[in-house]
Length: 415
Image (cartoon, rainbow, N blue to C red):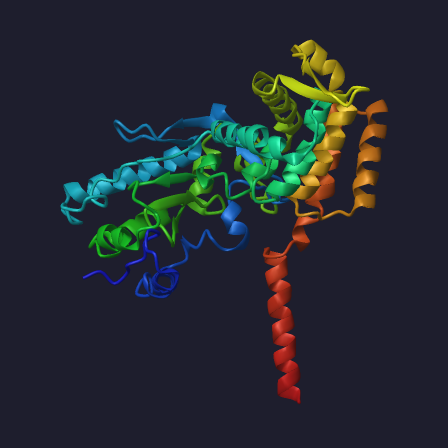
């Protein structure tokens, strides 16, 4: 009989809640060595591998993504992650050959990579296709605004983002750090079972109750991997561990070049790049593609007038389509950067007031005289990044909360 019955398809919310608490409290309580078991649903760990130490959104460079060594596996990951996982596989093969572990386990006899790196650009494209469809077919027809030009269409994106809120981001960098993205876009994660993460009984059956589970935990730990507490079949590269550092230094770069102790994800190295470099290009492209789709459906509007004899006349006005050259002339950098800053502010839950937003817009426009677009977009994102350390729910926020709780407790004790 299973001890953990949590599933997302239960109708009773209270039952699910209690079962999740039961799993969290008891699933791994008998494990002696837990230092590589991590709860990736806890504060900034939810974005592990998708943000750097300065909390910029990042993505791995695809030229360093390679296949995991498993024969027949289609899974991929960053090169050093694949090398570390190959050592895990080798150790399992040695153990099975020499009869050191059970040979009858579904997933923990011969370790196989079922899932690895997921292309974030492909996921973002699917997300934005849904967002554009919602904008064109749901929001605009009911907004009460007239769309007479592509500039009208573009400017209303801010109103649309207000409606969607920070839960459904538009920009690529905000999407990558959101729940809409996936930890697997980092290139640091490997799934060795492909099970339903929401089904606690499957975790118990195939992993927690397996006689090979402790061997599995120690093997992956010795090769530089974390194990997800909520999904023990998901491994994540611990890039600060000694074994993983060895695999990183096996590349043509020294470890010191790849990783700085104070910056776990040093995006200046050859593995990662910051996502905001794609933001303006994607925003401009999706506005153009979205407008083209919109015009195909809403290509005509009615202009109603009353004549002198009080008769109603209706004139049909056909909206003119535009090509990309015309679009470039209409949506210039100044309009796009203003739109971008306002959208980013909504995605960050209005971290800046109207006056501060206007200041950032003005500074960004002024910089066009002296700097290129890359520097300007970097300036804009630095303004938002500087506010992350004080955001609710983060590590600093939790630290302040516990410090204040301790202070109050001490005050009561003194009293």
